Structure formats: structure tokens, C-alpha cells
Length: 327
Image 1 (cartoon, one colour):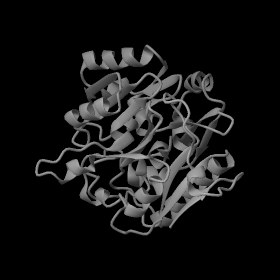
Image 2 (cartoon, helix red, strand yellow):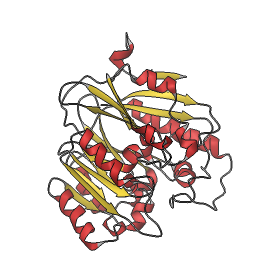
Image 3 (cartoon, rainbow, N blue to C red):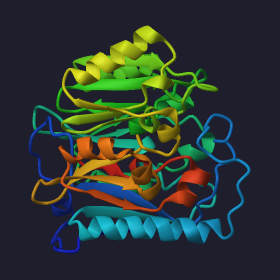
Image 4 (cartoon, one colour):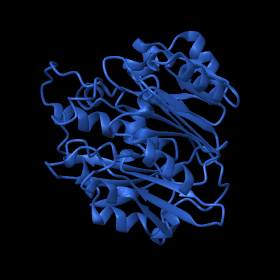
């Protein structure tokens, strides 16, 4: 089942539920795609490389708790006047389905067209998240489709997991990517050329192993950026990333401990009045220092947070992963 929700308006036809073409270089949107998963669980295939999943934790009724957390977040977003396209997933074979930003992204092109991009997923059970019914629904609002998911079917497959792999400065056309087995450097380069990004900044991370997704250690907003520089192993790469972010953003540097509390897995959104605010989990909010929150409050009107502990502990992702932007 797929439905569109907005607390303050109804839509006479499907295309009205998608954002109108505005500025190609906007960083934020007030339209999102979300998946309400009724079968969420810790993805056993993810545990190998996702160090943010708590492997030994025991949670009673995890599906029910995760659903309550997801519902609380979606309710908050609706109260903030966002438009949500929600797919209800009953598929037991897709435990990570509630993280749709990894397999799709949307873009505005300079010629006025709007594009839907599909991505090749590293884990086989995550490839099943790309439902034809979802794609058909989204293509109402997007006239072009770039299907990179074909790369997952090659004898020598390549992977690139959406805005998990790519953290985008849409304003200045810069793309940041932490290289891992989920983020292939050649495919990143191809993506940047396809979408006409001016700069591509790739780097390696190495804590215990490469960080599985870039958006777990970095966030870019309209006028700010959050990054865990300590997660970048090479000093030259660390300095390069810092300089590229500082050249156009107010930089908030977080520690590894804050990164593991999902302080970088947050997302700037805007309401219908174009007022910016930050969506994050309560765990992340409480892990920021007062100084960091003050710095961020120079760029967002408020912090909107709710507990996402079950989703974070068992899924290894937080608020940003739950939202796929519709531009």
C-alpha cells in the first residue's frame, strides 16, 4: 500500500503531491518518501560491515518498538507541514526496508526536468527493496530515470548506495563519498559526471573497518556541515575534507563517540514556508554539546527529535536514513 499524507492539504491528482520544479541548487525539501516496515529486524547480512548495529543487544518486541518509533517520527514530520509518500512494507525478506534513501534519490536538472536515480545494493536482500509499485508511483513526479542498479547484476558487480554512499552539497555541486565495498570509486565518479557535480571528494575511513556509509559520519545542510574528521584515517584526506567543507559551510566537528550516537545521521528539512529545521533522534540531540547546538541553531529554526533507539541499535541507521528526499 502506498499513500500520500499532508496534514494541511489534499491533492486532486497524483502529480500535485510532488514538489514543483524550483531552484536546481536547493539543499533541502519538504517532500519525502518513507517506508513503514511491519517486518523490521536486524539484517543479519549487515552485521559484517555495519559497526553501528549492536550485535549482542536483546530487545523485547523489536518490531513493535521500531514501528512505534517510526510512527512517532512520521507524526512529527506531518505536524511540521511536510508531505510524506509512505509505502507500507509487509515483506519479511527486506528487514532494512525502512531505509529507502540507500536505493533511490531524486534530482532537479538544469533543463527543468526531474530525475529519479536507482542504485545497486551490496546486500542481496536489500536489492528486493526496489519494488515496481514504488518506482511506478515515483515516476509520476519524475520524467527521467537513471537506473544504476544494473551494476549489481554484473558478473563483477559494483555498488553505490544512494545518499548513504553520497553526501551531497547540492548548493555548491560537491559530492562527498567514503569508499567502502558499498561505495565503489568508479561508480561514484560516473555518478558525479552524470549529475554534473563540479567536485568529487572521495576518501577512506578506518576505525575497525571502513565505515559502511558516508552519511553516518557526515551531514551537509544549506549553510552548515557536520563531520567526524577522526573517522578519516589519512591526514591529507582529513585535511582535504575539512577544507572543502569549510570553504562554503559552518563546520561542526564531532567526535567518534558522537558519531556512534548518530550525530551525523541527521537531516535538514524545510516546511512550506521554507523555514529550516533539523530532524534527528533524541539520542543524537542529547549527544551534541551545548556549543554545537548553539552553532547549529544559527542555521536552523529548531531541532525536531524523537527516540529512535530500537531502529538505531538493530538497524545501524537513524533519522537521516529513514527519509528519502523528493526534490
